Amino acid sequence: MSRPSLPLRLRILQIRALASFLNTLGQRALGRSLITRMRSYRASRAMLDACLGFRRVFPSFVAAQACASKYIPSGHEHPDEIRFHTSISDIVRESDYPVLFHLTPLAASMRNVFDLGGNVGNLFYSYQSKLSFPATLTWTVYDLPMKKPLGEKLASERAESRIRFATNLADASGCDVFIASGSLHYFEEPLHEILRSLERLPDHVFANRMPCSSRSDIITVQDNRSYLVPCKLHSRMTLITGMQTLGYELRSEWQVHERRLTVPTHPDLSIRTYSGFYFRRK
Image 1 (cartoon, one colour):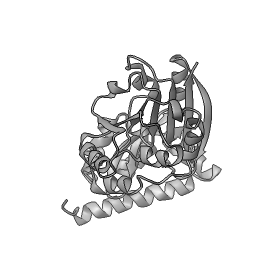
Image 2 (cartoon, rainbow, N blue to C red):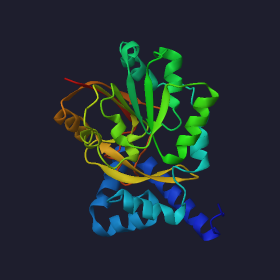
Image 3 (cartoon, rainbow, N blue to C red):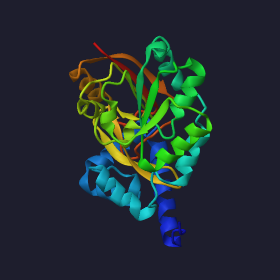
Image 4 (spheres, helix red, strand yellow):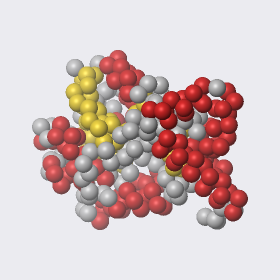
């Protein structure tokens, strides 16, 4: 990839500096009040949006992607993203332990797990080291097509036959466990709408490592330095009530302190930690 021009590099630097300043300012009550007031007036909101570039709020993923591409064209396909997730395929993170706790009594009888946005199968390898899944288990990963050959190569190197890679979300129909770990904020659709499309709903659903909004949904761009990706802070309340309409009850919720995603213009709505949820069908 060619290096951005000097004016573009300076513009990206300015955007990041302003976003950092606003995020710091928003940590205090007075700062949050000031930013909220600026957001409430059309002129000051327009000025903030213009200065923040790709770090502002957007009406849709399409609009967010169109803006981000003007600055840094790479997204989830960037080698840095793929390299990072491949390197941590065996690592169990702090936020995995609540999921492992709830999976422990289910592990021996699990037949089919669907892993939404599972990259190269990271969760399978890290959870297998703690739970020893049965030989009859099928762990299905759904992610971008370009990650499928990488995941299959890793599985071949490890002589692992229980993991497979799907290209169709409908393959989640009838699974015992549906897991979306670190992936739901990259989907514009809410979780209950994703599940509603399935012919048969899963019994257990885990939504882990996701940034949430304390009130309304917020679409913005996540700045990963070498690549930019549209993302959505799903409303916590909409997530829970949406799952309830499908017959699920919230069994557990936890904070994820490893990651944080704040929206510079919406410090009053940005929850300062990621979140995790476990839903079970009644």
